[in-house]
Image (cartoon, rainbow, N blue to C red; front, top):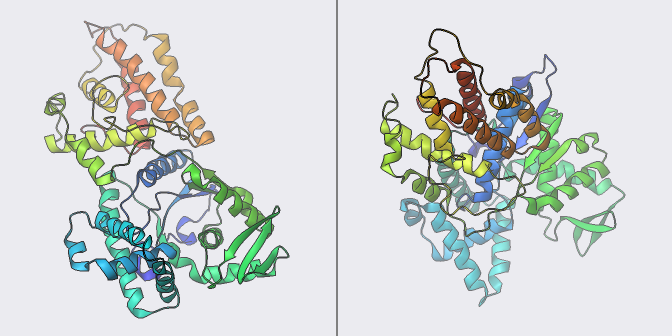
Length: 445
């Protein structure tokens, strides 16, 4: 089943640790097939990408892993819905096919209220998939390909790449090995036909009555495979805070099974949005639907007008999503609309663009404000704070402060012949570097 994924994994030999740089794997994005990419998965993508860029800058070797949700009982439900009430050709021709699939999934639950036997039928379908029914496998592969195609369009727009793209389905061979180890643990026992582990007085289901793996079992197997493949020093999981208990169970079970590296697993939680969630394609479309006058701000830029529009739109989404602390719930509303006001990406991009066209004049230069030079000097400390907390919002807050101090000094000087442009240029270099860590491109950059 792994052959369906075009990017399998970066082998350990590809990241040979000749200089003993620590290896950090980053589980990020990880959307579910047959569903539009959610805001949670988008936020995971952007946080994970920033952490990868920043940790690489700090001398770590990172492996960005996209763990696709392509397995589980919900697959039986969507496959049944397609068979009963859907049409593959119509879904493929739909401009938003994942939205169409999600609507069929909702239709399943609407009908389930009046026909409870659908639950048993969908479970049987997933069982057939698990045991290798060729017809069901072909339908499942179609779902995976369709989903990956549309996910890849979003990643390309955002400028996101991965070192490994693997679905949960890829770990079935490892699941068997992991299950055998769990069966031998003294904490394991059978109850009502299911395999359970008793951890800290709580029974945790590992294998259900149909001998089908659970989400937790597959994550355990993926963690084992991940360590065997990369021998990581740390494994980050950038996943919404609703999964905190899941990762507590994951690390506890791995420790119970005597995997010494269980303590190297770190859950990087973040909060969900508080408003009804738009789809990611809709968000990108709305961000590009900006006031044309914003583009006129960069009339002297060498980038085309459409390139500037794209950089502003994509960059604004990234900057807005990362401006909120990981644990902070927030509302999107019109926050993804590009703006030139302080605290917004457009303000920083305009400053960088205008400073780039001003050169240092000859003659004696004045000292730059102490607040500005001190802020510039705090850049590396800010990066260290992000590394320690896994929270990129510290970086956006720093860039907001630096851009406003720089702007105050740069724009308030009527005569630029004595202004210390060396400090100004150093500031915009820091701003440019900080934006690059978040995956944001400057105008003409």
